[in-house]
Length: 224
Image 1 (cartoon, rainbow, N blue to C red):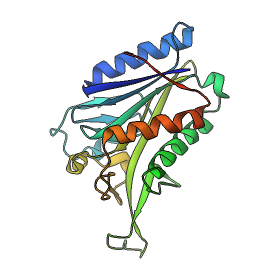
Image 2 (spheres, one colour):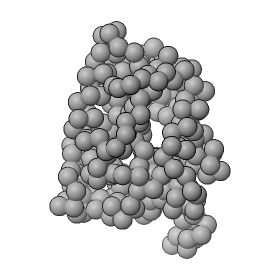
Image 3 (cartoon, one colour):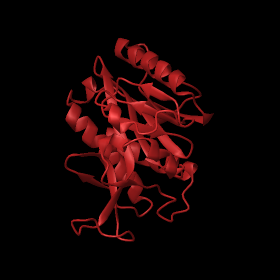
Image 4 (tube, helix red, strand yellow):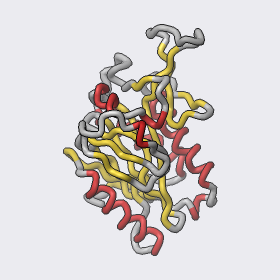
């Protein structure tokens, strides 16, 4: 069983990080159960351990938070579902790459519930969708936009941080950074793709696919 927690409203980023770190330490110590926490944040940018200063193109637009997760710059804000996964990777094979692939597969399966084909690309972190409605790239290829990002950190083999799926964020907010260091492609969302998907719809799809990918049953919990 894994605690499945959904927070209403906008959760301050600093509070979320502190709560995640506390829970991850408790899971590692055997004093708390694993947890998946679904939140939305106020508009902000986060800088992962590989972030390059030049990729923060508008540093005064939103607060910028340095974070110890892997990856580069990302945006979080209203209309984006952030999913923090506090799971015991040590008990799940001690294979970080396999764990990340499972997260990617979970995202792709969730998108498929809305008839969206999410794809992975070598050398590009995250989950991508083809955009045949947009002009071809300079090389003549079909345009592709990012719809989901992910990055984790481990504490004694317990994961925290996680993934973010764009439901209906203000896509112009991504203009203040080079998302994940990739300038040649755009960013999209489920609503931008023309789908009337709500946050509640996405949450149901995420919960439905979780057991299949992580061999654990979500258990409702009141708080982290």
